[in-house]
Length: 334
Image 1: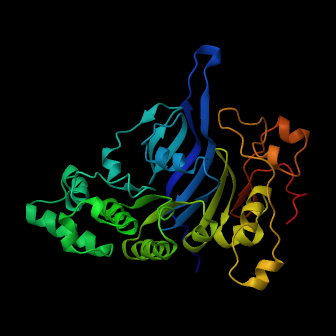
Image 2 (image 1 turned 90 degrees about the horizontal axis):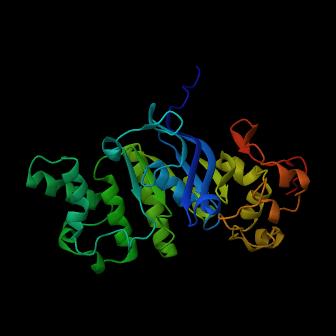
Image 3 (image 1 turned 60 degrees about the vertical axis):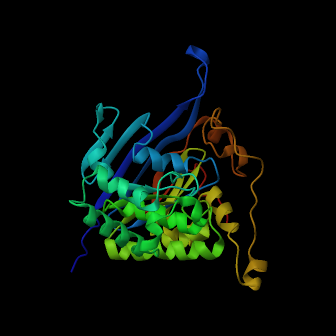
């Protein structure tokens, strides 16, 4: 019996997000935050997105939800084109806000300090008219608080009365308030203590099983992403450089940048830690205001040559389901 092919919930083609950075005419400057990124996410799966700070991960997440209007590219959600620069398509996002939600990175900045927790969660219920009475609204808010490990007493409190982990739970409850299908998790555990991180990550997994959610999980900690993701994409300076199944990427990465990132994952076992070889990168990340010509990683890559300076490598399939962008995959050693 043949397996049914997984259904693509979200498809992104040649996504581009440039931000103006001053100047006019020939002197106009732009920050190339995201440049020519393409991927898809299957229904019910978690795609992890990793990379150094400032590589464009968060911008990808926000641009997908059109919190930032894309500069170029195409976004298809559940078979419907919601943005296509080439064909001048930009649909009204309000109906899609119910289906696509976001959990923000900073639980301190993403909650309005003047609103109670009940009103923060209830705001989306009001906007989308999901409750027919005040009682139904309250019952729904309490149910959401309990889902994320809080209780009914918390509904009348304000954000400053909560710890970081509790605030992040409120952010998750707010995202769940409209029964979404797809959630962008923008570094949801990076501002939390390590002990709380594990609780929140486990809660994301439980919610996925219960509600059939699909995640884009953005983080810079590969060990967290490896735990929760089905597939992992690696970004460097606005470009996607490698994308593969989670186990395949960790055990058989082919891009020099990914190999260096994986070598930096801490090992709990002292023997394994001593045996593992750290592969440090030379230099700093170039500015997205003035990225290197050709391959953006070439200024820090031990395999870079003239071809890398002239041509940008094509992001192509190097093995079934394994994509990478590098001119010298045959030379790369682990």
